[in-house]
Length: 113
Length: 114
Picture 1 (tube, rainbow over the protein chains, first blue to last red):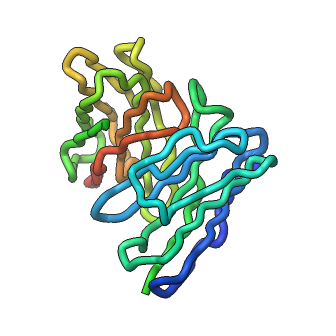
Picture 2: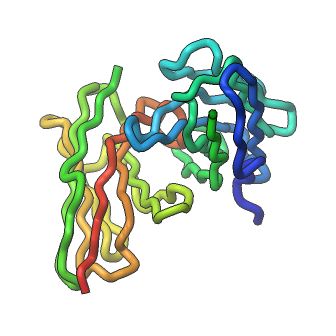
Picture 3: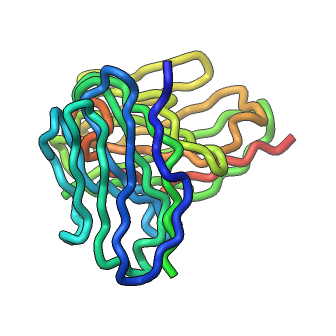
């Protein structure tokens, strides 16, 4: 079956702009989590969605937001981009949250200039 | 919140030898401890995980041990092969599974010398 798909794979944006990233989970998976990966901070949890509801949130400013649709696809949005937002953004899906394996997508590489 | 420390940051071993990576966590309520392998330019992939009601788990050449009292867990790879070269991340969460709310260690770059 198809894996977790993230689009686009690469993005270049200018400071102050906003960006929307998309994640299509594995068919049947209802939990989608988002992570930011940078060389300095490593992998950091952004938020998790299950059945269109945000159930958990990491320590990121309000400029980072997300949503999940009825088909479990998820989007994350970053407004007023800063240079420090340059990172690899990864999403992971699982059947639910507990007692199931999570699968990561290839990520979206965002560069803010 | 949870804090996960991972050591060493770089580990070089001879092919065929064993490799051990150690992690400590701070929140005694954490109940799920996965290990991910990430090759250069690729996605993290789950290689093994352990839950707090288990002390050890093994899958072929890979094993993980958990000491809840000391709040540390370790990854053991035996008979290392060139394809084991990658960055390995440990993580901890309260969710019992999945990828919800994982706190990751900073990673260990494992280098297998031929």
